Image (cartoon, rainbow, N blue to C red; front, side, top):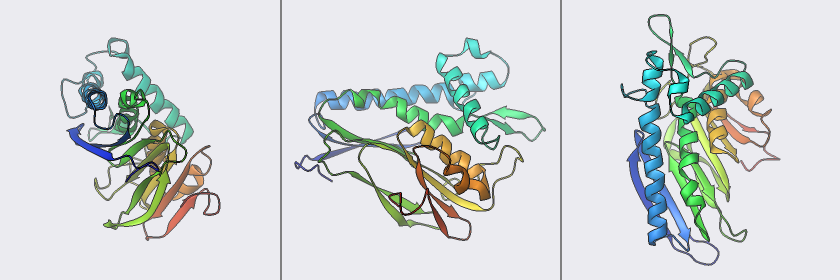
Length: 263
């Protein structure tokens, strides 16, 4: 992929937060010291987020908070920020989205994963945004954030997988500046549940959301998925978002509708 002026695209990959994170960058700082430092800063930011929020690490702040060893005020300030986002998403989705998951003992455990991935990726892009005359596309775990400074430059073309045949694409979405997030069962199984019932929705197979903020695109994709049969209806109420809902029977619904969106 090149810009309209022919800039070369440089690609980098790291493994952090339990998944590969990739960067495509083009323009002035694509392959110089400033660009490499920005990439290292992005990876370091994600590693810090993992150390704070990983539910798989006993020493993370979120695990210690879940066990009652610390209070929110004892944690780094980003913990309160993420939990507040989770509360806002719970309100917006009528309780279908939650940072609290039912446990086998009948209680509830703290799991802000539905907020953290998109939030952490967006936060990690700060150093990349500081690069002048440089476009980028940062991707991790099926979610991505793009920036294009020149309106004449070629947009990033984002492929949306078919959850029933991941080697096939359902759509290619051109994104110049914005975010794309997908929630579904293709790679992680039935990991999203409707917090109101504790059950994984059966009606929906995948939800993809395009918006200005990766934090909220990721949250909304997860919330819409959790809402099951109401996914498309609810997503259509979210201002500034477009999306694609793939149902369990293989049919699709573009949101808000095919005439007004890029799907």
